Length: 225
Image 1 (cartoon, rainbow, N blue to C red):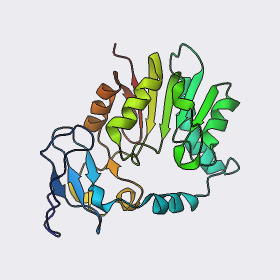
Image 2 (image 1 turned 90 degrees about the vertical axis):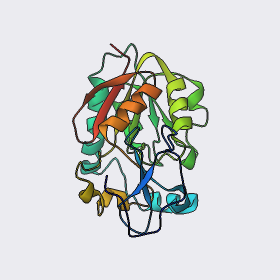
Image 3 (image 1 turned 45 degrees about the horizontal axis):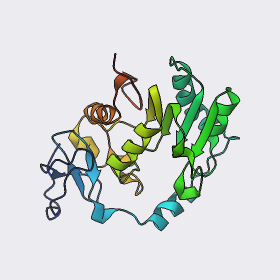
Image 4 (image 1 turned 180 degrees about the horizontal axis):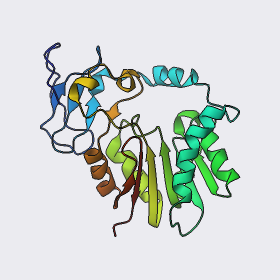
């Protein structure tokens, strides 16, 4: 990643994913500061530049996600299809970060899955993590998580033995110069930006490995072979 000389260096901040102290500021959309971890390859926003939770919730409130929107349903269907292709032992699915509408939850249920919505920001599924699931779906969620080790530990604890995690998040550009003005990094609610190497570290924290990826925005993590 290209280093950023436009703003004063960010105060030392360890990696939000692996804890490494070797992070360095890199160029990203102003005015937020972005840091890169050479150890796990995560790029993340300096926590001093996070939006407030009220600002984050207000931003989500501008989304018009609806089961009546064919484009949005088609977008989510790729996640349901990815889960449907897995050799699950059962049909219990957790929609982790379901959002206020829970459209993905509804699509899973329409396919015959016993799907539970979980999103504390909107008061959904307060006891969802006390159960365990054959699969956990994170659709446009991983880029938002502020407490990565804690949230990943909770996800791992919610997985049944042999369970899978399906992640939908847009992989960041390979060309560092393209990140400087990347639209996905302009969203004030997005604080983590992923490469395949960073997601392989996620897989290890979840006790598994990357089983498949479309190389763009969809990754399946499952038990080691």
